[in-house]
Length: 343
Ligand SMILES: NC(=O)c1ccc[n+]([C@@H]2O[C@H](COP(=O)([O-])OP(=O)(O)OC[C@H]3O[C@@H](n4cnc5c(N)ncnc54)[C@H](O)[C@@H]3O)[C@@H](O)[C@H]2O)c1
Image (cartoon, rainbow, N blue to C red):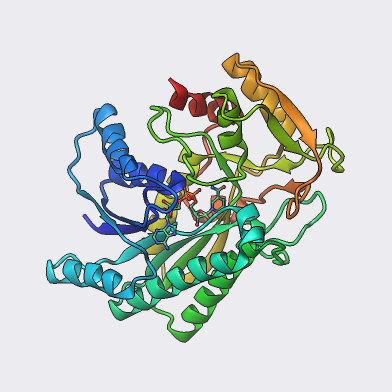
């Protein structure tokens, strides 16, 4: 079976996707600098597969390094080529992801996200590895009132993080125009939460992630006094932001479907929204989390945060029509699966 190179595979979404790849009989090669993850995750991916009672007929390997190191990356592609197992597909998760850190340290974000992507793409090009799935984000879109976001809507990110995502998408557009052998899918994720139901793969950012569930878990563990909710005066039904929360395993499975789509279809460059198409307010999900898990924690409203928008919900029709994929897990699954990490 083919080996899929997974950049950032020790991270939150990458590790869940590696589980799905292995379940689908792909060999997995993870490259990760561990700047926002730990090597433990590699063992936990293997343990998750073992606990599911699945026998691994495929291989998983981890090599630590930074994508910006072109020589190192070149050696990896070359070693695989020499072993007669050329790398043909890449899922590119690696990148810095905190919207708020990106506002504080924009140049570090540009440097890391752009240079690592350029290094990867140049190496792929050299080795004629033309299949790429790129982790893009809903943050590329301009605010669109309370309408579902479609892929054809205006893109105008407001944060340095979102701008790096759009910039990489644009590089990929130019790349495809220059050589139509490429098969590229930029997946625009909405709000992934939850974790694998065996509880070994929590969202474990080293720095401040700014995401809701890590903050909830931190509050429950007593690592922060209370959960902060940014704004209670947004123009929504309860004054808090509305998001399209998607279970991370549904998101992981979307990668398998996108990979299969690219393998089975003509070369192309597409951007796809990966969300559920349903909006839930931040307050609503906090209340659901407390209710279904029987856990109470204090929360507190503070001012709106820079870069937030009141309503970010996907129109996911294009992904549903092109991919053999459907988000299967609901808000309750997202809430209950995420506390399994605490047990
Ligand atoms: N989590 C979200 O809410 C979300 C939403 C939309 C898009 N995304 C994007 O999806 C991707 C994965 O997100 P995540 O939540 O799993 O993030 P994560 O931080 O958990 O995982 C990213 C991984 O990439 C690694 N990495 C970063 N820079 C690297 C480099 N230069 N070389 C090698 N490895 C490097 C990190 O160590 C980490 O393990 C990111 O590109 C992120 O921007 C995430």
